[in-house]
Length: 403
Image (cartoon, rainbow, N blue to C red; front, side):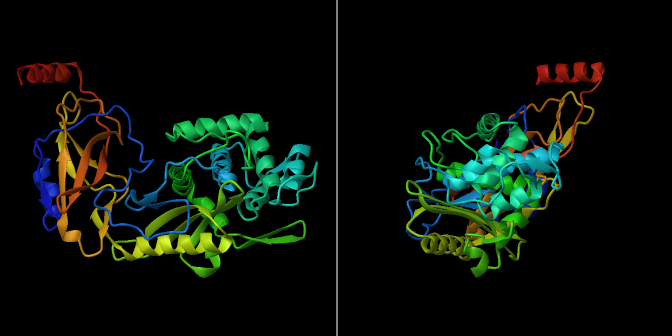
């Protein structure tokens, strides 16, 4: 059974009427947030861009707003360094590395730097702090810094590349294969605009402490001052990242992210533009896409973080019910002025049987706009429900059998 709700009655109805028995789907593990689904068929058309492929993601509502040629294979070039950075921040989280730790710069790292156009001017056989390597890789796009970090995390470049590919699989990426940590052209080194957006979103979401590095306009190391190649950092104060790249095969590329205030709260967008013809063009087209994303939509908050959307009955548990919602606010974006067309239904398949872990995905909030499918939002348990004792389990088993 499904219940529907208009925008006007959504907040009241979802916290009341949706507590009635509905049809739910029980899932054994927490559903991944990423990658984002393709844009809804009801989504307005994006602007024309002078680029081969692009994607625009709304991180606040977890919606894809626009995409073109998003699944076409591309050479990721220096956008590869986003995965290198992810694994470096992951290593720091686990305690394997620290920002002030000095790590060696191998002959291989130094040579990788001098064979490319992007380098941090590291000296062979020197020792450099991890934080300086991060800045060199992120701000200067240093190939040498990337390899030095890869060796510090993985022991060898080969081990690190294997880690990169395992992480790509963990993200659910199907078309991405890495052959090196810095992004130089290599057979089989490939990704797509959509999958690169997933890596970028995961980096910004899982390690928000990385964003200040990506927002830095310049970095000086060894007496050499180099500016960030992301021109939007000088043009748009809301832009705080993320990464540029260029090879002959990929053209000029930019993954940009911006955070702007809205009446419903802060809203972050992330754009991926692949295959522009110049640094100026990739900046202009990225700005156009971001501005369209902010100017053409309203953000609507449906529920606050950790607030129940509904309460569901639980069988064989120490509690007879569980609250369902999200640990982050439930928000959607809709074309400007169309919020009144929002409706939502909650579906579930009974029975919901304990034990349940906190954060387990057990249902979906299905949102439509003017009668068209718009977005599906997974609903999670807001608390754990352990199994009941043997008598409670037996009694519910009998009741379920009768039912």
